[in-house]
Image (tube, rainbow, N blue to C red):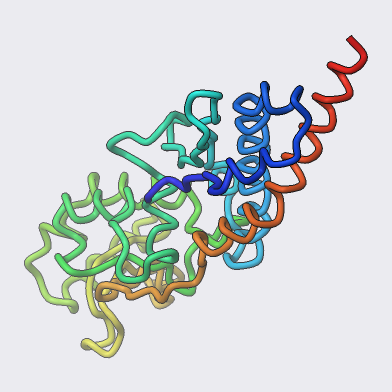
Length: 261
């Protein structure tokens, strides 16, 4: 996602009528005021993310960092962190999550989806969405423990997933046999159960003789997202509102300090 650039035009006009003490320290005062404004942009971003998105994770809420303005470069930038907590790299987790909501369109495959795709379980052009019976964490996502369980299961029992070249009937018999034998108490399998009446996905069969069928993951075509967050517009509003106040405050503090010297 493009960094948010914080810069202010008309700085020369700001010098008109200023005390000579301030004029001589204008570059430093401006840099401090712009950096303070960038911090206000981050604060406002966190508030808007909580309003726009459903239960954003702490990582997403804390996913911005500031490149500060300097006297020689009077502009600041708000960047996005990667999963490692560093600057933008090849794997930019925050951008991957937020970009579709900022620019619209489809999203990049998540790590879980990439794993399913590499295993031949998730077809090209599909995304994995939590089913009604998925274990959901406090942020509305499939729990990490269930994701690990699914990946481990299909590695141990590939015939239930991508290596299965058998009918749904045979899959059902296989599931019942395993449950009856008491080896797992449940089985996962990939398919369209109910003779194709149910959507393609990953299902959990459990209960007596495997009679209970639970949708864990549903495969859907590429999702389209509408633009939900006008972050550029928000940035301009914050700059217009906060920079004049920050500049005046820092200029007043500077003037008071040097007059006491």
